[in-house]
Length: 118
Image (cartoon, rainbow, N blue to C red; front, side):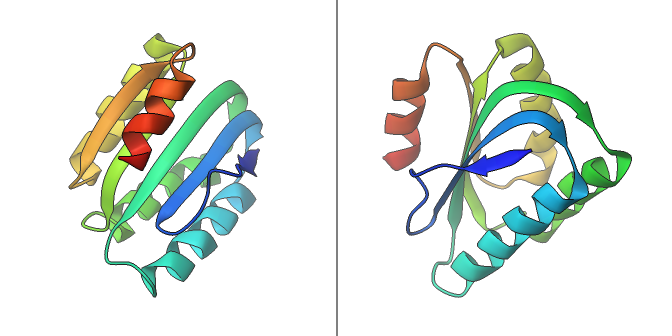
């Protein structure tokens, strides 16, 4: 499940991943990306991974489609969480993102937030 964080404002979409990731999570994310697309040329994503208990196949497909749709729009992505899992996720997303992708350990939340807001 994606939980939209209070950090979300202007061209920054921030969310926490916890539990099972479903296609409906990407429907919400896609709506936010489309809304900000009308107002900003580029967007930033801040993703905190708390725990992932599973990912629906349809959700994985939506993830790939989201990156393809917004390849040039994503200026920065910050992934925060267990570095082994997050590093793999970041490597998988890098070819689909024109902007900078940075990985932060779960203890580096403040550093990640500072970086994404810069």
